[in-house]
Image (cartoon, rainbow, N blue to C red):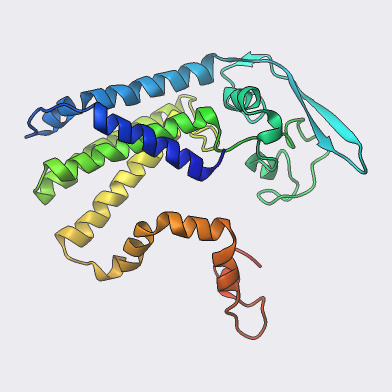
Amino acid sequence: MGILQRIAIAYLVTALCQIWLKGDDDVDSGLDLIKRYRYQLLAGLLITITYMVLLYGTYVPDWEYRISGPGSTEKTFTVKCGVRGDSGPGCNAVGMIDRKILGIQHLYGRPVYARSQQCSIDSPQNGPLPPDAPSWCQAPFDPEGLLSSVMAIVTCLIGLQYGHIIVHFQKHRERIMHWLVPSFGMLVLAFAMDFFGMHMNKPLYTVSYTLCTAGTAGLLFAGIYTLVDLYGYRRPTIAMEWMGMHALMIFVLIACNILPIFIHGFYWGEPNNNLLKFIGIRA
């Protein structure tokens, strides 16, 4: 799929939850907030359980893929799996579900795994394959696939609950405390899960990754809120405010290479001495 498609799915499901899955209880405390939106929290829990059952319970058989060689030749690679619950690059259920439903020909042909130490002698950059590279190194993989997008919905639902705090609590202290407590809780749980083997994995969008990013976002949000709304230091954050209001437009400009080309046009001495090179994005 794609990043914008993933955002659209998460927004749609979250919007439907906000319309259909909310109570009419009065909110005077954190427990009241949980009670009012208990069905939204239950939906997030059920989505998470479904994801974990599919990720760790789906059997992944051996599979093949082909890549084009010189001329019109093709080379076939076989990835040996025959496992359940694998979260590695070649035998995870996320990739298998995408291959079965979307078709391997529709998956992203340059996966992030290609830059790993196992697949590139120039890691973390793209480079030639090592002599003992695994068979999955050149396999297509969609970083915004179907199953991994399920947990993106949970991330959006968590953000929705943070928004509810703004609506139902008017005092700064109450808002900040109701953001900090669950944020710290999610971070503790995320690192505990990672320690016990359920590792943070962005391409698979694992539960521990979801909790870590949501908890970190909550802490940053509470920090910026304290700086701007509580202490009035708005001027240093005006640029971030503008970027937040136009985030999708900025993403589209970058994805279409319009913004990098525009910035590339401003240089000193010679074209290679530009802002992109200065910040390390492009030589």
